[in-house]
Image (cartoon, rainbow, N blue to C red; front, side, top):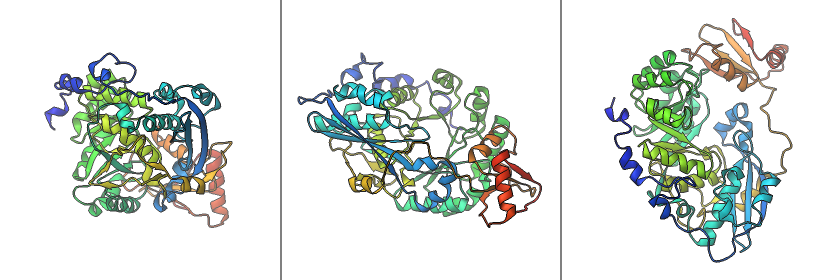
Length: 464
């Protein structure tokens, strides 16, 4: 292991000297004083806010899996903001699983006030905040990143994302990623798939330069399980980063685990508290997301501690473009950003985001620097849903163990909860999950009904 991994504070002074301004809290610093003005000569009061819901189609491989994990990830609210000067800005928010529809109360709060006055307020939500920044940038004839700080890079690092699936399907996704200029892939490592087997199938299909990162979302449970498992995976040289192998609040366990593996460990910024994370050296870098103020604050702290991070802002290519502007001014946003925009058939922007050598050119035009794809918005426009979209219940998911046992589920949330609670074996060799097609039999209907009623059905054999 490189000793520099362990001595994060040795260069903190130098990093702090070049760190970007922390929005709202370091206004008196020399760097903040040099930030560009954001209010032009024309009126920039918010005149009108429009909300449009769209339901976007997944690409074929994600479509086979996202219905059980995150069906609501196809739903977005596109936000348009019109200023008194006639300038229109746009943004978006995923309306389930981390996002929320824009409320009338928030629209009332920003309407009639200067857009620049509200754009740093994270509480207005992702879509409206993006639209406000876009409109202010267009009003002043500058790209969004000029409103955020000093540009430090012209191209942004980006990664391809996929949920849990077989090694074969990951291989298809990575092939598509390589064809589109990506050099990094982030996958969900899950206890209901044998990750070693997934890597055995996947890695021979990858170019030597291609990196893969695995997000465990705590499913290795503790350092005892995790240390042996993670070190065994180091034989796959494509693996570059592990994210949250065990619960992030387990400070002692994470500190021990970091010393066991030579592969960097990433953790979501803020858990444990940042000073604890830095003092106890629990990780090598961070995952940073949220609104503009939060991202700039956390990104500046990471820079002061000389910690790299990846931006994780989930959405279509609207959100991906927004993340690129943030990346333009954050010195330590050197790990490939996650937007999940690769999930969808359409990008909602023109021109589309294009990658080469794992990076995308950060737009230099006013505001976002790209146009909203109005045709796509109209094509996939829907009426707002009154209730959140739920995963289907007319399915049967079978988790097969090497002992011959099978556990049947209807809900992905339920089997995830069972693994996190330690009710099922942790990353058993040979385990896999499959969806059992409805063959119309009484047996299928019985298993589906019992799994729906009881949460799960355990079988010593494989009856279906």
